[in-house]
Length: 109
Image (spheres, rainbow, N blue to C red):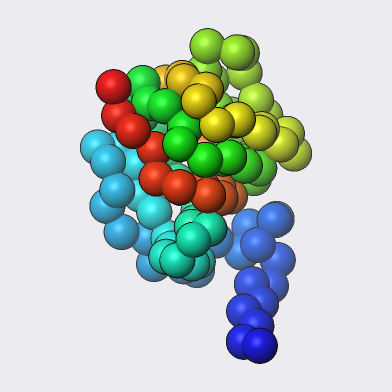
């Protein structure tokens, strides 16, 4: 079995990683492209992701900043589970970095 280790990722280890464009105002660093997909997302202040539906379970851990959706505000250390079939849009007022895992790609509405 292959193993990847990201030292100090939860504190600030993402600062040395090379992110690439994902959506306007949001960059991504892919940890795993296969299912489940695992990545880091870095939101610039004011960035957002439009309304989408989850086709599989999505798990998010807030590493820095805050993320806001229709369910409220999530801050550093919070873990979010978005169930299959759930819908939301996401934004970050101050900017944020999240560790995210998708079972399946989302469907943008």
